[in-house]
Length: 133
View 1 (cartoon, one colour):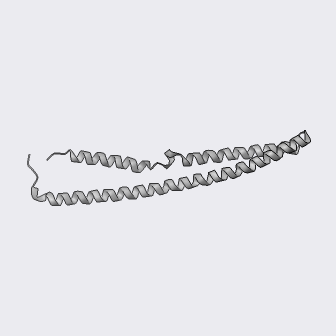
View 2: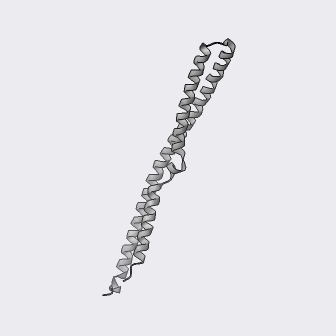
View 3: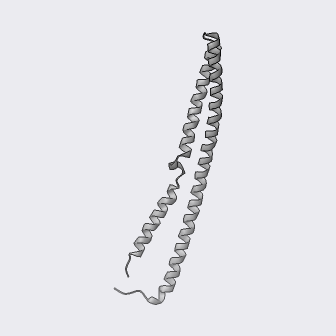
């Protein structure tokens, strides 16, 4: 087996440094892009959460008014209708809360592609370091 020419070492080192620099730059770009996407999802979740709180407040108001109307009339009429509307608003609120939860979960916010690429790159670097000349 022939040994590599030691005179090529500076060129090889320079090439390795360039490739490593390119790798770091591309990983940083991927992380930046993925974090931007995750921030957008978090924003959507936060907006849904605020909407859910507003809808819940409206629903509680309607339900309270319905209960008052029901107690006042002690019959089926406008109060029961208000209860149905309030219940429907609570269903909408539940849907918004579930949407917010899915967008704000730690799994949804984790930059998984960046982590996987970094693990893959680390494995490749380890493999390259174990190659013997």
